[in-house]
Amino acid sequence: MFMAALILIISTALFFFYIQTVCQEILRRRFDRDYYKAIVHANRFEFPAIRKAIEEFNAPVDYARVRMTLKCDFLALTYLLKNACNVRPRLSREERLLALYFRATLALLALRHGLKLREQPVVLRLTAILQYFANVIGQRVNLVRFGDLTASDYLLDL
Amino acid sequence: MDAGIVVLQYTTYLLEAGLLAYLLLRRRAGRLSALTVYVGLLLAVDAISRPYFLYRFGFASPQYASFFWLTDVLLVLAAFGLIAAFFRRACAREHQLWRHIRLLLTVVLILVAGVSWFSLSQYYNQLFTQFIIEFQQNLYFTCLVLNTLLFLLIQKLALADGELTLLVSGLGIQFAGPAGNFALVHLTAGSGFGNVLYTYLGPLCTLGMLSTWFVAVARVPRTVRVPELGPQVAEMAVTVGRRP
Picture 1 (cartoon, helix red, strand yellow):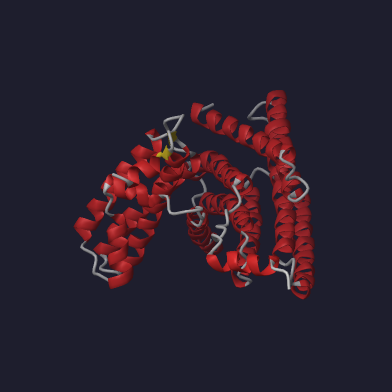
Picture 2 (cartoon, chains in turn green, red; picture 1 turned 30 degrees about the vertical axis):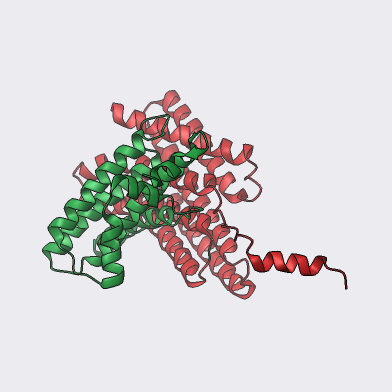
């Protein structure tokens, strides 16, 4: 009985650990340039500012505001992922997994806030997911050309 | 049968066939030979022979049940071989370490195969009792521990091999889910919750593993930014081209 309980606990923990590893490995993908900047600029996303505040100034997390901002950015980015330059208006398997990962991490943020634990690492993880989404959209948009301009060149000039 | 499980099963068959076709047609089978063999075996067992036994003998028949559990053991032992192949890939530059690991893996394989053979032959008549649950729970957990050791080794050696990390993580999902579920069935003996969960969790974990492997093998290689030719390079070119 004891052995079975031990196996249950360890296996469950490792199950979630491996899922997290897969997500982190997908997020590690390098893009040949920072496509996300044009998308952030055009849509006025706020997640880079949050990340900068934490990374450079170690700013404390205003939980309610940060949560709302990240959630809004997430909703807008997933909408763009589905509809911007996408032949099939739906998320790919990788994107769906990352969207789930985002939601789970957001729930973890709420838990850490409730337990009064450090929130910065979780917020950084959330911004990394959003940056990945913005990079994917940017890369996709970059492939579409309008005359001599790519869509991202056009967005940067706005 | 529940429509949800049917959809899950057919999606799994499609992914198995798709991954095998991808590995063979994109000429990845040579580099990932162990993975190709394992996926081929998985397809042969899961999508061909099990449905055949199901069609021939029926879901409630002892023949189908025996075949299902014995092929499950076979698949776990094949996955053990796959882990060994991944260990070899991780130790490609560490020959001394590989020699030790090879010895360890051989001992563990003989132990696992020996214990499996002995237990199954001893309890073959009582196969559909608590025995098979406990046996599978231990077998899956052994492979999960080995897989986790491999994962830790990859981290320790600081290998920049994203493909291997994803392949190992996929295998980890496939072992961790069922190992935990078998333990739950063992702990809640008599209640149907664990069994119902296994009906869905098993195919879901296989689906998760295959999707992760697809991401790993179909991934576009990382693009390297080529530095722009600066004035120094242009100057160097002029210097090289100049006659003495």
